[in-house]
Image (cartoon, helix red, strand yellow):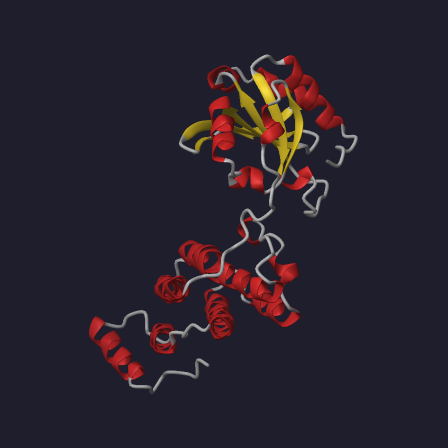
Length: 314
């Protein structure tokens, strides 16, 4: 194993952990564990601790100050392998960020019994210390954690239909001039939940399904081809409603282009008819007067579905 680099924070972590009888093993995981991921001055120290007793370290948090002056922290609990563990996510005043995960030894024993690593270790780990020698039989990380699998035809269709369903909320909120709701649905939901995974699939196709996306799209922009990168940047807008309508249609255009490309590569049919009908709906809503009646809306939509307002969607 490659030796750990000289690092003042790692030295402090090891010294504190070795002096704490409840902490039996400490692992450095994720980016700084040496898995060839990009590292910069904001990279977190992701620390996995296996302890004899969970409650004491979570209840008495004075030990947080061993590594500096705390600026802000968050301490959620969650489950791994059906067992509770606690996270202590801490940003220190000097900019150091340490994400501690405190797990009972039971989790480590379950991992060893199953013989396969959960994602939070398969992403990469380095043993900082192990008082009982339990980690010596841990499998090496494969580095495959969090790399998307090739979607099935059903998953592809669900993503496409989900995008067009969710897009109807954007049009409604735009017509109502509901800025916060528009931004949430357009830049939050539509781009993060629907467009982002599609863009990730397109990159995986180019890279043989070996690329690891970052959380929330981190690293995505740099991985896209120049034309798609420009289209994604241009799909964002400020706070004026007309700007947001343009942003909305650019987002739909980008989704359509990438979805067709991904579908053709995977041998899946794109939902052209759904796209055309929902796009016609959006064009109608955009042109709808603020004092329009339901009857007028229905009449305009009937006309649009007959093809008078449908634009080319290919």
